[in-house]
Length: 440
Image 1 (cartoon, rainbow, N blue to C red):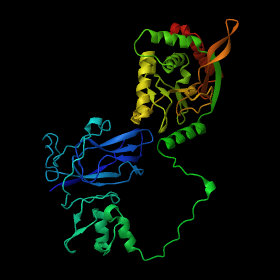
Image 2 (cartoon, rainbow, N blue to C red; image 1 turned 120 degrees about the vertical axis):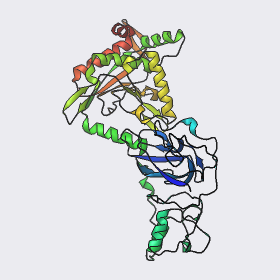
Image 3 (cartoon, rainbow, N blue to C red; image 1 turned 90 degrees about the vertical axis):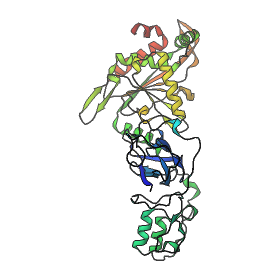
């Protein structure tokens, strides 16, 4: 007799407590392998494919696409064992748990190659389930289950043990109900409706006036960004200073680097290298404030956050130990993380732990900004577009490539003199890359 195992939404790490179902990757009746991704969910930090630690036949799914589930809520139930998996190989004896399958830790959220090329379907599992599933009624149709022995012969479209028990305890004849679920599936709401006394049908709510506009749920990535920015504004007394800089020599240096062959060096990578050198001189800006302890914590490593605009909204990936990377390594890491952000494959760990943010808003065609600090960091360097402008160079008016640099900083960690010194050093390196070479 197959054993039905319940798989719940696992803890995805980084303090996440809920996730939204984006797309189901399996259907009821599908055969799944151990560690096969069964659902794609969106957390407040990333899109994640969740693998199932059991192999067998999917007997029920819980939740619809677009629905948010808390960590620990049931996702699917799987019938495991020889009767449900006639074609599946047996698990090694050293790993088996007695059900014919070996649950494995959900490390790395599964592998992309673990999903079968196509779904295999088997006959519906009709054996009784000994352990009831403690969860809301499934929302997707499942194989038809035989009716209770006391009832006339024939199938009853209900699969949840909770729905059956609720009907039995209250004397509700399931055969007299018309299910509101897919393919007439009887849900818990149908049984509860049968228990309520008949009530007049309420009049439909009036349509919203045309001027009230569209309501968009503030959740997922957008909700997480809103919460972080609101907290930053509430807690951090920020200030901003800015300066225009002649980036002609920096652009010429980049062109010379890329002319020798090898991987291309991006402007963002050069600016990142300048930032790490500046933070070595002004470590106050690579810090955070511990409000409970009333202490400023200066951080030993620079984990550089950078803003990446995607179809899912603003993402802020983190380059770990940026102080140890050269421009070529920084370029490669920026490219890798940006591609993961655009495809929605960033792991939660890729979006946390930053100590300083580099924000290149010049890609939007703007010159300046007063950005909100990425809490709990203490500073952010903003970079505007690099464009040709009239500039006095060596006593003569000339057309040069000019960029506006701005620094928004937490005034609790330093005063204006430190912030100004940091920004001036960055500007000097942009105008004359030899200044940076001297400090390396």
